[in-house]
Length: 85
Image (cartoon, rainbow, N blue to C red; front, side, top):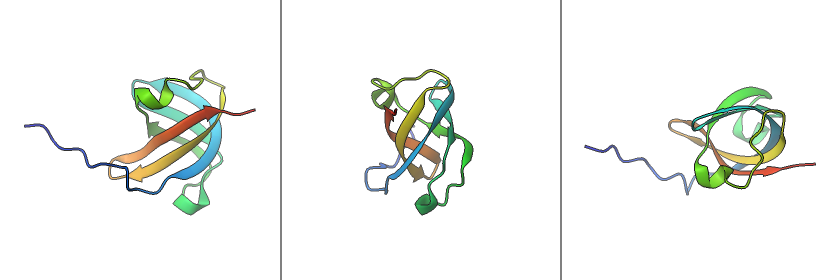
């Protein structure tokens, strides 16, 4: 039996920026500035990320990025990722 994954479409997305620490499979670790609206303190956190989100983003350690994320029942999930100057 396959477990249904609830859609995250209706969840609010929060904006933040940071620096890529590492990518290991679907886990992108970011050093970030936090997002007070989401109750996320600045620091280093793992985010789940899918191939369609990272297809056009710079995924190299040290790359500066801005991103949107959602708080899901399974943790933090990146919904948008792009380079920043």
